[in-house]
Image 1 (cartoon, rainbow, N blue to C red):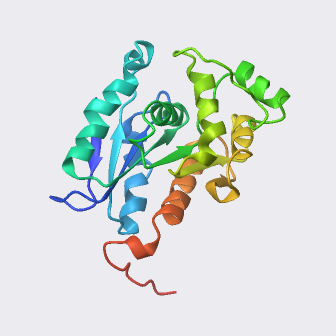
Image 2 (cartoon, rainbow, N blue to C red; image 1 turned 30 degrees about the vertical axis):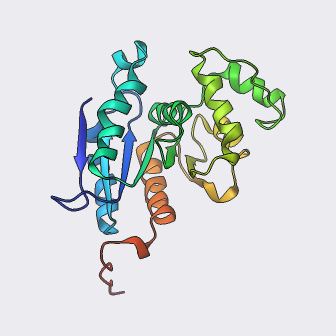
Length: 227
Protein backbone atom coordinates (compact mmCIF):
# COMPACT_ATOMS: atom_id res chain seq x y z
CA UNK A 1 0.00 0.00 0.00
CA UNK A 2 1.30 3.44 -0.85
CA UNK A 3 1.88 5.49 2.27
CA UNK A 4 3.67 8.63 3.39
CA UNK A 5 5.76 8.26 6.55
CA UNK A 6 6.48 11.33 8.65
CA UNK A 7 8.67 10.45 11.65
CA UNK A 8 8.76 12.54 14.78
CA UNK A 9 12.55 12.30 14.70
CA UNK A 10 14.61 11.02 11.81
CA UNK A 11 16.36 7.72 12.41
CA UNK A 12 14.28 6.69 15.42
CA UNK A 13 10.99 4.88 16.00
CA UNK A 14 8.60 6.85 18.18
CA UNK A 15 6.70 4.94 20.89
CA UNK A 16 3.39 5.97 19.30
CA UNK A 17 2.33 5.78 15.68
CA UNK A 18 -0.84 7.29 14.21
CA UNK A 19 -2.08 5.78 10.95
CA UNK A 20 -4.52 8.00 9.07
CA UNK A 21 -6.69 7.02 6.11
CA UNK A 22 -8.04 9.74 3.80
CA UNK A 23 -11.57 10.58 2.75
CA UNK A 24 -12.86 9.35 -0.61
CA UNK A 25 -11.35 11.19 -3.59
CA UNK A 26 -8.50 12.53 -1.48
CA UNK A 27 -4.90 11.35 -1.17
CA UNK A 28 -2.26 11.00 1.55
CA UNK A 29 -0.58 14.15 0.23
CA UNK A 30 -3.66 16.14 1.20
CA UNK A 31 -2.90 15.59 4.88
CA UNK A 32 0.46 17.28 4.34
CA UNK A 33 -1.00 20.13 2.33
CA UNK A 34 -3.66 20.79 4.97
CA UNK A 35 -1.16 21.07 7.80
CA UNK A 36 -1.65 17.80 9.70
CA UNK A 37 2.09 17.15 9.98
CA UNK A 38 2.83 20.76 10.87
CA UNK A 39 0.29 20.67 13.72
CA UNK A 40 1.92 17.59 15.23
CA UNK A 41 5.45 18.94 14.85
CA UNK A 42 4.55 22.30 16.41
CA UNK A 43 3.59 20.35 19.52
CA UNK A 44 6.91 18.44 19.46
CA UNK A 45 5.15 15.14 20.04
CA UNK A 46 6.90 11.75 20.06
CA UNK A 47 4.43 10.48 17.49
CA UNK A 48 5.23 9.06 14.06
CA UNK A 49 2.58 9.72 11.42
CA UNK A 50 1.66 7.47 8.50
CA UNK A 51 -0.82 8.55 5.83
CA UNK A 52 -2.10 5.56 3.88
CA UNK A 53 -3.71 5.62 0.46
CA UNK A 54 -7.20 4.15 0.05
CA UNK A 55 -7.58 2.55 -3.37
CA UNK A 56 -11.02 1.74 -4.72
CA UNK A 57 -9.76 -1.61 -5.98
CA UNK A 58 -8.81 -2.70 -2.46
CA UNK A 59 -12.24 -1.71 -1.17
CA UNK A 60 -14.19 -3.49 -3.87
CA UNK A 61 -12.16 -6.70 -3.72
CA UNK A 62 -12.34 -6.59 0.11
CA UNK A 63 -8.58 -6.87 0.61
CA UNK A 64 -8.19 -3.50 2.34
CA UNK A 65 -8.16 -4.81 5.93
CA UNK A 66 -5.74 -7.63 5.16
CA UNK A 67 -3.44 -5.23 3.32
CA UNK A 68 -3.51 -2.73 6.18
CA UNK A 69 -2.67 -5.48 8.63
CA UNK A 70 0.21 -7.06 6.75
CA UNK A 71 1.67 -3.99 5.05
CA UNK A 72 1.19 -1.29 7.70
CA UNK A 73 0.16 -2.42 11.18
CA UNK A 74 2.22 -5.58 11.74
CA UNK A 75 5.42 -4.00 10.32
CA UNK A 76 4.97 -1.09 12.73
CA UNK A 77 4.74 -3.50 15.65
CA UNK A 78 7.82 -5.32 14.41
CA UNK A 79 9.74 -2.03 14.48
CA UNK A 80 8.88 -1.59 18.14
CA UNK A 81 5.87 0.74 18.15
CA UNK A 82 4.22 0.32 21.54
CA UNK A 83 1.02 2.18 20.74
CA UNK A 84 -0.78 2.33 17.40
CA UNK A 85 -3.69 4.65 16.78
CA UNK A 86 -5.66 4.19 13.59
CA UNK A 87 -8.01 6.77 12.21
CA UNK A 88 -9.24 8.60 9.23
CA UNK A 89 -11.61 11.06 7.68
CA UNK A 90 -15.03 10.10 6.32
CA UNK A 91 -14.56 6.81 4.42
CA UNK A 92 -11.12 6.52 6.02
CA UNK A 93 -12.77 6.58 9.44
CA UNK A 94 -15.16 3.84 8.37
CA UNK A 95 -12.25 1.64 7.27
CA UNK A 96 -10.41 2.32 10.54
CA UNK A 97 -13.42 1.14 12.53
CA UNK A 98 -13.81 -1.90 10.30
CA UNK A 99 -10.18 -2.77 11.06
CA UNK A 100 -10.66 -2.34 14.81
CA UNK A 101 -13.80 -4.47 14.66
CA UNK A 102 -11.98 -7.23 12.80
CA UNK A 103 -8.67 -7.03 14.72
CA UNK A 104 -9.58 -5.54 18.12
CA UNK A 105 -6.27 -6.41 19.80
CA UNK A 106 -4.10 -4.69 17.19
CA UNK A 107 -5.25 -1.08 17.58
CA UNK A 108 -4.66 0.93 20.76
CA UNK A 109 -6.96 3.82 19.87
CA UNK A 110 -9.19 5.24 17.14
CA UNK A 111 -9.21 8.81 15.81
CA UNK A 112 -12.39 9.23 13.75
CA UNK A 113 -12.92 12.57 12.06
CA UNK A 114 -16.35 12.93 10.45
CA UNK A 115 -16.51 9.19 9.76
CA UNK A 116 -18.87 7.68 7.23
CA UNK A 117 -21.23 5.49 9.28
CA UNK A 118 -23.36 3.69 6.75
CA UNK A 119 -26.46 4.25 4.69
CA UNK A 120 -29.85 5.54 5.83
CA UNK A 121 -31.30 2.03 6.06
CA UNK A 122 -28.93 1.11 8.87
CA UNK A 123 -29.03 4.46 10.67
CA UNK A 124 -32.82 4.42 10.34
CA UNK A 125 -32.94 1.09 12.18
CA UNK A 126 -30.91 2.62 15.00
CA UNK A 127 -33.05 5.75 15.17
CA UNK A 128 -36.24 3.66 15.40
CA UNK A 129 -34.63 1.72 18.28
CA UNK A 130 -34.11 5.05 20.11
CA UNK A 131 -30.36 4.81 19.73
CA UNK A 132 -27.61 2.28 19.46
CA UNK A 133 -28.13 0.97 23.01
CA UNK A 134 -31.64 -0.19 22.13
CA UNK A 135 -30.67 -1.51 18.71
CA UNK A 136 -30.21 -5.26 18.37
CA UNK A 137 -27.99 -6.19 15.41
CA UNK A 138 -28.76 -9.91 15.52
CA UNK A 139 -26.64 -12.37 13.56
CA UNK A 140 -24.62 -10.55 10.89
CA UNK A 141 -23.11 -11.76 7.67
CA UNK A 142 -19.37 -11.42 7.33
CA UNK A 143 -19.79 -8.84 4.57
CA UNK A 144 -22.39 -6.74 6.42
CA UNK A 145 -19.76 -4.10 7.14
CA UNK A 146 -22.11 -1.26 8.09
CA UNK A 147 -24.01 -3.18 10.76
CA UNK A 148 -20.76 -4.70 12.02
CA UNK A 149 -19.46 -1.15 12.52
CA UNK A 150 -22.50 -0.19 14.57
CA UNK A 151 -22.25 -3.39 16.59
CA UNK A 152 -18.66 -2.37 17.34
CA UNK A 153 -19.86 1.08 18.45
CA UNK A 154 -22.57 -0.47 20.63
CA UNK A 155 -20.01 -2.66 22.42
CA UNK A 156 -17.25 -0.06 22.68
CA UNK A 157 -17.90 0.97 26.29
CA UNK A 158 -16.69 -2.48 27.35
CA UNK A 159 -13.45 -2.17 25.39
CA UNK A 160 -10.22 -0.77 26.90
CA UNK A 161 -8.98 1.10 23.82
CA UNK A 162 -9.98 4.78 23.53
CA UNK A 163 -12.13 6.07 20.71
CA UNK A 164 -12.09 9.75 19.72
CA UNK A 165 -14.97 11.04 17.57
CA UNK A 166 -14.85 14.49 16.02
CA UNK A 167 -17.20 16.12 13.54
CA UNK A 168 -18.42 19.46 12.28
CA UNK A 169 -21.75 20.75 13.54
CA UNK A 170 -22.98 21.28 9.98
CA UNK A 171 -21.45 18.13 8.48
CA UNK A 172 -23.78 16.42 6.02
CA UNK A 173 -23.34 13.21 8.05
CA UNK A 174 -23.88 14.97 11.40
CA UNK A 175 -27.13 13.13 12.18
CA UNK A 176 -25.34 9.77 12.13
CA UNK A 177 -22.41 11.27 14.04
CA UNK A 178 -24.82 12.35 16.79
CA UNK A 179 -26.23 8.83 16.93
CA UNK A 180 -22.71 7.56 17.49
CA UNK A 181 -21.86 10.31 19.97
CA UNK A 182 -24.83 9.30 22.13
CA UNK A 183 -23.20 5.89 22.60
CA UNK A 184 -19.88 7.35 23.76
CA UNK A 185 -18.69 9.11 26.88
CA UNK A 186 -18.92 12.90 26.41
CA UNK A 187 -15.17 13.35 26.82
CA UNK A 188 -14.63 11.21 23.71
CA UNK A 189 -16.67 13.49 21.46
CA UNK A 190 -15.53 16.76 19.88
CA UNK A 191 -17.88 18.98 17.87
CA UNK A 192 -16.63 22.08 16.07
CA UNK A 193 -18.20 24.61 13.72
CA UNK A 194 -18.09 23.69 10.05
CA UNK A 195 -19.11 21.04 7.58
CA UNK A 196 -17.62 18.07 5.76
CA UNK A 197 -14.49 19.99 4.76
CA UNK A 198 -10.80 20.41 5.49
CA UNK A 199 -10.98 23.48 7.78
CA UNK A 200 -13.22 21.57 10.20
CA UNK A 201 -11.14 18.40 9.91
CA UNK A 202 -7.93 20.30 10.64
CA UNK A 203 -9.41 21.90 13.75
CA UNK A 204 -10.62 18.49 14.91
CA UNK A 205 -7.12 17.11 14.33
CA UNK A 206 -5.56 19.84 16.46
CA UNK A 207 -8.09 19.15 19.21
CA UNK A 208 -7.36 15.42 19.02
CA UNK A 209 -3.61 16.00 19.42
CA UNK A 210 -4.17 18.28 22.41
CA UNK A 211 -6.62 15.89 24.06
CA UNK A 212 -4.75 12.63 23.52
CA UNK A 213 -1.09 13.68 23.55
CA UNK A 214 -0.72 16.42 26.17
CA UNK A 215 2.40 18.53 26.50
CA UNK A 216 3.81 16.29 29.22
CA UNK A 217 4.40 13.63 26.54
CA UNK A 218 6.33 15.96 24.24
CA UNK A 219 9.93 15.22 23.26
CA UNK A 220 10.98 18.52 24.77
CA UNK A 221 9.21 21.55 26.14
CA UNK A 222 7.70 23.74 23.50
CA UNK A 223 9.33 27.20 23.32
CA UNK A 224 7.46 29.97 25.06
CA UNK A 225 5.66 32.51 22.91
CA UNK A 226 5.71 36.20 23.58
CA UNK A 227 2.35 37.94 23.76
